[in-house]
Image (cartoon, rainbow, N blue to C red; front, side, top):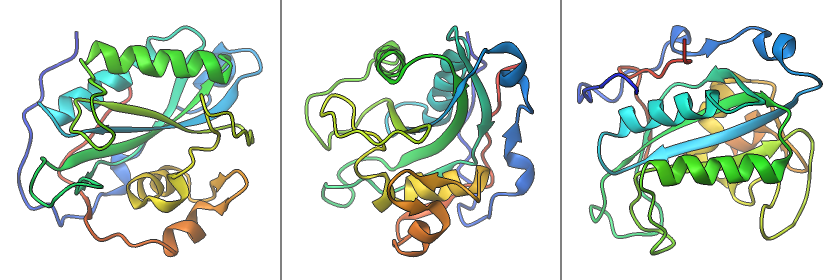
Length: 203
């Protein structure tokens, strides 16, 4: 059971401070055998968005064979592919983790976490309680339609690249290049850092 959060609607232009990036130093390396590094993007635009993102982080950390290494700051993002104002804005974040799960099992866990928060897949750009997307897994490049790695649109999305850059400025999108360079090439319009909000690593 996660703690209850009240969303803070104060000034969204406040920049996130480095202290909001929480790292679990080397814990995964001491508790997992030969783990792989993976990056997961989280998003929510229905219900208590901050509480949902924190609940997803807690659920991922409870997964055997998985340890979260870092949690990004929160960004508020205008929805893609819909009429302006037709949906609430998203809260987005990125987590970096170490895991012994293969990509297919990690995807199953991501879908299970979404379902736990009542994710409904009625339409492609529909509002949703929770998105849990695998952005990258080690250096894997795979065009399998069931799980394309890296995520086929991650390199175009500031709401993925910006929080990823915050937790790992030297990160690379496999087959696409440096996150820093990719972020410079996309617009950040509609993607606002919420330095007044914070997510935490599970204790």
